[in-house]
Length: 465
Image 1: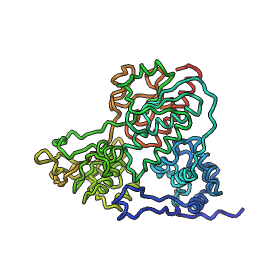
Image 2 (image 1 turned 45 degrees about the horizontal axis):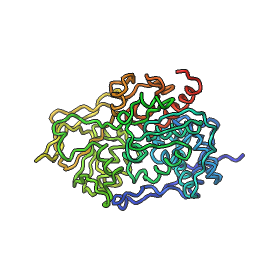
Image 3 (image 1 turned 30 degrees about the vertical axis):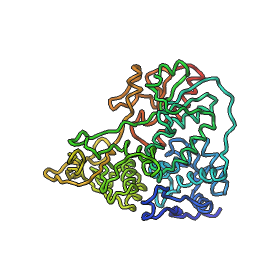
Image 4 (image 1 turned 135 degrees about the vertical axis):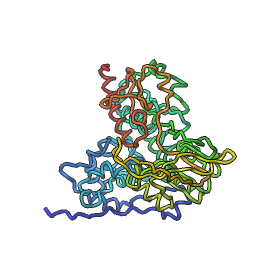
């Protein structure tokens, strides 16, 4: 057999020029053509031991679907992905592949890894472009009913798996649109909402019913749901923003990233036909260094700010955001003020006008494994701005826990769950995603949801808790 010639670099994916995209909300990458997808898929070495699968929280058969793409069998590829991942058009766009499947790709030792995420996105979009999404044959019904609370990545994944197991599934969503963080948190230019709707519709087609404007803990408690359902999956995410507790934090023009992005993404503040107020600002500061901070900073430019600046307490090497998001932000003109910690917000007539900061140097690693920022005494300085967005993290809403005394929670407000089964302290109630981890990734939430769905199925079959 002839030795496979290794192509060192990924097939480049075309995208909007930075100077154009900063003035619109259209998706940045254009995606692969069929020819480009096949060329990229052929870079896969089809390893005897596919390490890429070790890095996938939802256990997609990566070499299998790549081989099908390489042969031009795009329908076969998307069908294979959907055996374990009901949301490939989403995960192909927002997964941190560089630290998961692609991060452990054998090619990554010397070259660029196979563009697994790009190919996952391609086959999902290709199928939609054919005008018909393949729906698996409905299984025999078990007669068991499961309530899924939350329609974000965890809820949708669990609902899809449970429906395919033959259980009756009702999804309860507090907001007026399904999708959770996928619709309120991630901007249109990174994840078009039409694609989220498409994936939600697919989950519905499997048999899950979605109920909107239904706040569990208010409209109905968990105890009341358990009178009608045999099990419950909590997938409500982490929608409670963290603040810094600094002087002046309540000044006008200071937003949490949750509020800022929800106004723009879910409530369409960027579109003139929607009367959703949002402060646009000439100079916008975003405090934080994760993906949410990048989303807010890039959104500010699209809303018309002249300057958008990231304020982050560590160095560039410690930025938790995806490398691709940082790269796109820099291309678009986002500035980075690194090794900088805010100490106070200053304002005039009730509106924020400046952020007082102190410079840092990096010390020894902390509990996160990253070097700890150490303030430099006497290095205080001011950055003038008229809008500031705090994007330093979030916790789960306490509503469900406060109305369910038997539900054990941790000090940070997350729900305690056995990570092997996702069982909580309350019989019949499971949890997955950000509600147990705090703000994390879409794919981690989906992986936990799959574990929970399997455990729920076992519980419904055996009755053993």
